[in-house]
Image 1 (cartoon, rainbow, N blue to C red):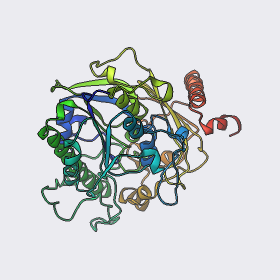
Image 2 (image 1 turned 90 degrees about the vertical axis):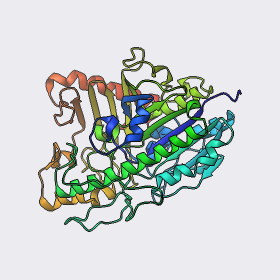
Image 3 (image 1 turned 180 degrees about the horizontal axis):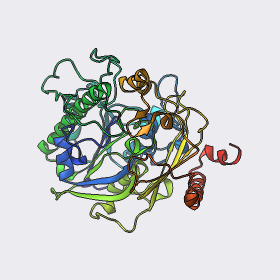
Image 4 (image 1 turned 120 degrees about the horizontal axis):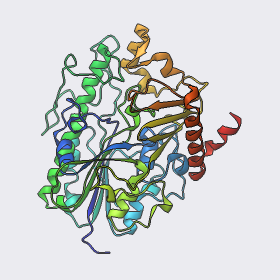
Length: 448
């Protein structure tokens, strides 16, 4: 293989939703992500296929839905989910194709041998600026290389800040600035709160902490971009920025509502700077492995994957020769969080099949314990953001939303007679998707 192939950098945030300047919000401040988007393409309809860290990351590095690759939920501790032994991941394929491969930061994959990298770069905890500096030697060495850069921000970290009655959970925010970096602190009395959250003191306090963590992540991205520019490799590098799932709040992470699955996807292709553009093609994290393989000249088509390369879409704002729908499949978060969902999403509609609808929705432990939700329990609130608490906890078998008329997904159309044909159509699509992807939950249509 020729050595003039582009370098590849995949930046993965941990629980970052569509929050920041280039995504249309006033906070948090994300100047470096804004600059990255300004030099490339921002996909406006990009989706994880499961809103849980390890399961989502398994999709990112295999191009296969998690119910096919075997990573149904978390890999660590008692949860113990892992990809099947025959799964071949992106770093392995790139190594075979002549790329140096390196990873840094969060590694939420199993078995480790299936996700082998040449180099494991020292991490730096929540200090993303230092983590990027730790990558300097790797990116300045021989080309071509693949760098898998995975922040721990803005994931919750479990520490407690004594501030409000329900004691907001911190988001890795240090008590003092990291060396060579300065924290961006937000006033919780002044920042806007997303509509999917309640406007309560606890939610405001936690949202301010989340925004602080996102800004720290942004500075780490900025430092890595500067390093690539300093060594003259920025213009020969494909850079993709994504998040594994939505923000770590009830209503986003672990759900397949829009705040949980509609996520950042910024692509800066190799070459000189270009004017900022957007692309409204429906893409998912199943497309990432094919896209990186295509950039490396190693892609043989979509037959081996559940996605396809989206490189050909980078110069198209409204692609016409692309798919009309995408699919999502969530089964577990922690091993105790059994609440499988299958989703088909078009440009206009979302259809959710809640396979365990008789059960109360199962919370991730950190989301149940977070101050935002505990405040709802303490004050016996009837509403959580735009949705009744009862509707959040107890969901019907089918949910159908018209996203153009109802972007907050609050009006379920599935039981209305005039939408029966659409429910039948989407149900058939989900069955066909499950058959194509060898979904073990396919039989639930028959006897449950």
